[in-house]
Image (tube, rainbow, N blue to C red; front, side, top):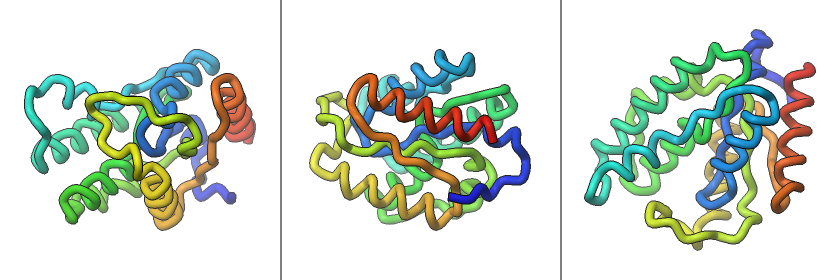
Length: 179
């Protein structure tokens, strides 16, 4: 895959993405430790755990705005790993509400600049009260990949279980930051 970014500092911004229960949070934490960077947790989880009801459209908008703020606040760090991306939010809006806010579409090419690690749904699904799609992970993974391609973002697939998955991701990050 060719790089579409001219500024090498963007090579140190990584978005960990993929369907639910594919190890994104663990990978974000481990990569931040491995590379002495920072890992930014997914804001959606923080927010959804704080409300005592099912989310609605306005909640997802608030989550998206806050995630964008987190990206801009942290992307200047020497190396940063984000435990989600705006494409996940775009697909969330489309799948649940059949609508994607125009402002989010406009923000994706700006705030979304970086390298993406697309976690394959090859890990067993694990129950979590916030997870909704145990039988749609392959489909959602395909949706994320289509959106990454449409946006022209550089991405790499991450696969494997346990240490193999982490090693795969470390090798990818090493290749990207050496370029």
